Image 1 (cartoon, helix red, strand yellow):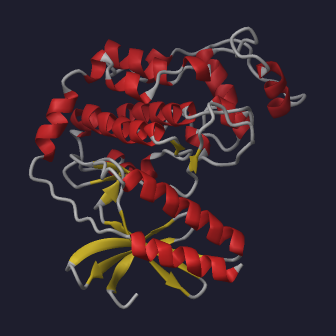
Image 2 (cartoon, helix red, strand yellow; image 1 turned 120 degrees about the vertical axis):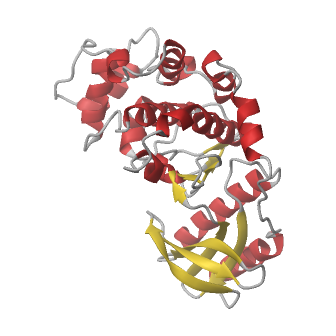
Image 3 (cartoon, one colour; image 1 turned 180 degrees about the vertical axis):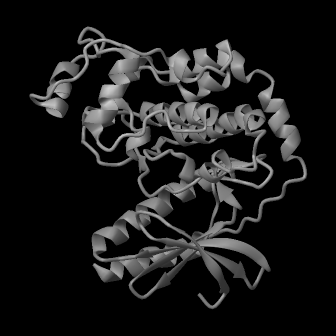
Length: 325
């Protein structure tokens, strides 16, 4: 890490700590994610994250965070990323951003652009949430980050249950340990959309049962004829405990300030049935986001991202990990 000078800590995630550093070669500020390896298995997860990021970074997509370097170190690895001032959670809950609502369409559009790129490359993020969305101080650039839970998959449905994801943004199929697809990312984006409008989470409960109960209160009990096997998944989740059978709330009442077209898009993102949920590409074409692409392109003019090829450092990391096994 001789190349990077520590400035200070940024935060702590599930897999490691993140620091702000200065790249002494380019004189730029970067974010360094230190991931310790308690086992060789954790090292393999880091290799998976690096592989996913390399695949996504091949086209230098504007809405995917760029991995600049990987520096191996005894007991772990440092992943060096481009630096962004804050995450979306900071922006949503900033007490000084009284006009945040005027940025919602632009931010939502860019989140969907990043998710669309992931899905086009057969990558499911599985942990889309405000803290994993980086944003600049002007709310003009949004980048999807933290691919520690992401997977590459060429199949339409994944039948292996997963604990990936953050409870407030987990799709029903993840809550019930049912087969899932890239539609789980769209549900998470819908939850974020509602959170930006409300400036508080749509779901804020402590366990999967409580979240699923609230989903049923809003969208109704899932029907077997619409979702084959859902009855068994519900039994697995709830066991003998009670859950509501009918909707008692309306989505519109939870986002009263959202215009009709926005409500229509939100309802399509938060569709209870994964196979009917809108895709990222379809959402980008929704009337609610009409004209946003041109506005986003205009606000990005003059923005220059610092990129550097990290093939050699990633290759070094691969051989270093191989030697540890």
